[in-house]
Image (tube, rainbow, N blue to C red; front, side, top):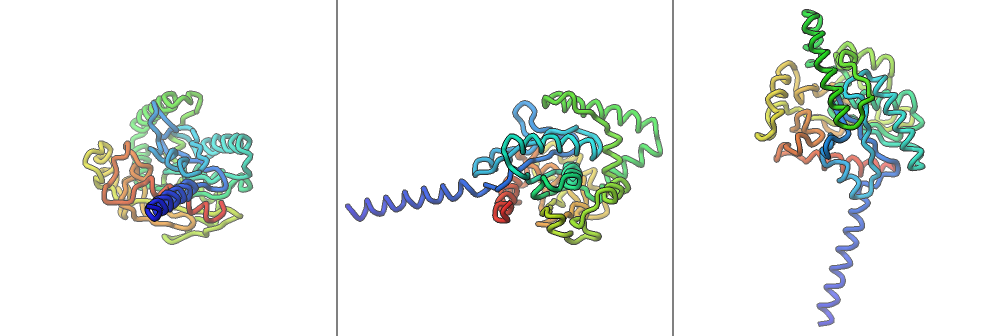
Length: 307
């Protein structure tokens, strides 16, 4: 009987120890700030842009904040909005720096902040960001060039949609400028951005950039699956169609090499552009690593790096 009780007690102790260990898996030194992409938001009616990701990071020790910037605007406008929120987060938490993680256009937004205020940033992680431009954006820009009236109508509609998103997410004062966003996301616009805000973390080719630049660690990952990843996902047909505009592997909106920044963790996940942030509502491929797990792994990676 004593042997049984001893074994049972040891089992409880091991279980408690394992749980305690797991509870600090994502406990980074500095707060994590998640930054959405084009047509993004922090939360609408309880639905997160980074679906189920903040709570899973927080559950194991991370301090997580989700920024809200304009649904569509330039890198500078969105970047200044983010910078103000970063400064508020630092004032609230007492932390010296933050870890920025941006999806899609959010990659430009966090790049901007890391350039203008590197002293406030511990790390930059880009997820599925077209940092060298997007062929899909180039195609839309061509439509605007060839048929200006159609471009004007499209821009008006996109601005209206962006305003609706910002209002629904509780940020009605965020200004919208869809043409500025489109200019940024084209190959030409991305090259101009990279020239204005250079960093050694941006590779010249399709390899890795510098993993550390001006004291900031840089990471990235992305997907290459623009075909359907989940038969229930209603966004799949649009991403399939957009993916056909590319000559190289892509996630429906971003080419594989365009997503590279700093240490490229992996650039060929079987994920489309929305899968990368666990959208829509977790309807992702059952045959690929969970996007939530990727964010948790990145938080643990930052923790182990002392960030």
